[in-house]
Length: 579
Image (cartoon, rainbow, N blue to C red):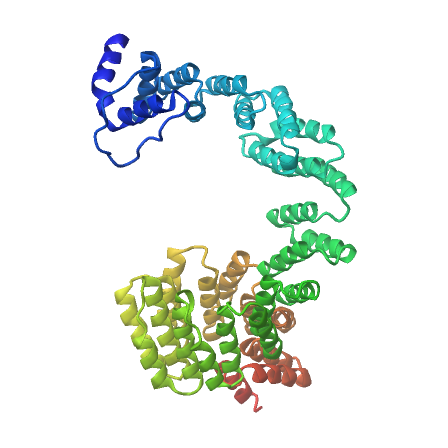
C-alpha cells in the first residue's frame, strides 16, 4: 500500500504546484535547501521531475509529510517529515519537521530533530534553542539546565535577554511553580548576574511565591544597587495585586533614594493617574521633567493633567515646550487650541486648530473647531460646521452627533438636543454613548422616568458601566427622595471605578441629601482635591455653608467661578444662597 501510494505521488503530485516546487528546488540546490512552498496561489505548471541526486524515499517522505499536514493528519506528517529531515540533512526541512512535531505534541520527535541539527554543527544556536524548547515540553529539568547553560555560553552577549525569555516561557506553563527550583538553580549558577536573579524573581511572582521573589529581588538589588528593572518588577507586581498603598510607599521610598530613575518615575506617575490620584501623578510627571526636559510622555501628561485641573498657564507652558522640542507633534496644537479657547482667546484657538493637517488628527481638529465656535457664542456657525464634517466611520458619526448635541445643550437648548439624540438613536439603536448623552439631557429636563429608562438600559447592556450607575444614582439623589437606592447605585459605581472624583462628588451629594453633612464634606473635599471642577465646587460650597463655614463656602464657589463661570449648577447654587 505504501509503495502504491509512493508511485501515485510520483506520477500525480510531481505535476502539482507543491511537488513541482519542492522537487525542482531540491534538484537545483543539491539537497542544500528547498524552495518555500506556495500559500494561496497556484503557480504555472512546473517542468517534469528531474531526480538526479535525489532518492525516491526522500521525495516520498517529504511529500507524504506535506500532504498529511495539509489534510490534518499530524501523526503521519511528523513521522514523514522527520524521516525527510534525516535523509536530507537539510536545515529548512528540519525546521519544518520540528515545528510540526511541537504543534502535534510529539516532543520526543522534536528533540530528535534538534539532535539532527546538532550533529551537523554542535555550536548551532538554532539546534540548542530547539533542544531547549523540546526539553521544557518533556519536563526534563536537569537537561533543560544543562542546555540553557550551554546556550548562554554560546551567546554571552544575549545571555541576559535569554534568561528573562526562559523565565517567561516557563511562567506560561500550566504549573509555573514546578519550574521555580530550576530557575533558583540558574540563579545560583550565575550568582553574580543580576539578570539571573531578576528572571528568578519574575518566575517566583508568577508562581505566587512572594518570599522567594523578594529574596531574588534583594539579590538583584545587591548586585546592581538602584536597578530600575528590578524596582519596576516589584512595582508592577504590587499593581497587579491591587496593593496600591504598598505600591505607593515602595515607589516613594525608591525615588527618595534614587530620584533620577526616570523610567521608574514614569511608571509610578502612570500608576497614580490610573488610580485617579491626579495631583500626585502631576507632581511625579513634573518632577520627571526636571531630570528629562524632553520626555515626550511626561510633557503630554503634565500638560493634560494641568489642563484638567484648570491650571491653564502651566498647561500652556508644557504644550508650548512640547511643540518647541517636537514640532511635528500636531496633537500639541489640539491641546493649545483648547487652552486658548478656555482662556477666551477664540481667534487664537481657531488659528491653532486650522494648522492641523495630518489625516490622523484632522477629524479631531474639526470637532474642536466646532466647540470653539460654540464657546465664542457662534452657536449657529458651530452647528453648521459640525453638520458639514464628513464622518468616515460609525464611531466618527457618533462623535458628530454628540458634538452637535453638546453645543445645543450648552447653549440652553436641551429640547433640541433631545430631539437630535432621539433621531440618532433611531439611526444607531442602543449605542451606549448616545444613550448616556440622552440620559444627561433628560436629567436636565427633569424627566426622571426617561432618564432612568436609558440608564437602566445602559446597565443592562454593560453591567460594568460605572458612569451609568453614577448618573442614575446622582439623579435619584438630586431630584427624588430615593436616597437609599441612590446611595447603593453610587457605591456600586465607586467599586467599578475606585477614586473617580465625579463619583466621589455624587457620593458626597447623596450623603448631603440624607442629612449627613460631615461625611458629605469629607467626600466632596477629596473630589475637589482630585479634580477642581465648578460643579464639585458648587456642592462643596453648599455643604460648607450649611455647616456654618460661610467663608470657606464662598472661597469654594469662587474657585468654581474662576474655572467655569457659566456652569449651570454653580449658577443655580449661587442664586439659591444669594451670592
